[in-house]
Length: 153
Image 1 (cartoon, helix red, strand yellow):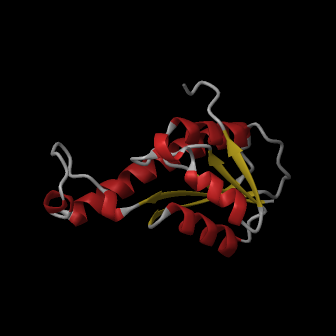
Image 2 (cartoon, rainbow, N blue to C red):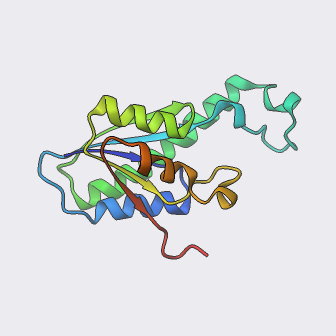
């Protein structure tokens, strides 16, 4: 089974990792864990973001986003390997639009399943109520598992 696990470090994303770790998977399963960041939305640390400050240090912002993405993925790998050490896991941190990048990764990976949290940590996540997961559920060519954080308020 080929699975794309798209995570962003949010509570719902953590729930998605835990949900996947609880699933009984075939021995030859492969998991591709991805973290996607949007370059245009990266804030400048410690400042009230404006267009001028948003792009002042783009290379530093990209490096920081990559570093954060690597940490989020590393934590997910630990959880998955703890439950099933035989899993084959590949990873990537991607700059782009989450909806588009997740679908493209699922298609290029020939995924049987996409696993995501019900909400991400985008600026408008509370307002949009999981627009990425909704979009994936209606546009993906494979099955989509949307995991809710039971403890979310």
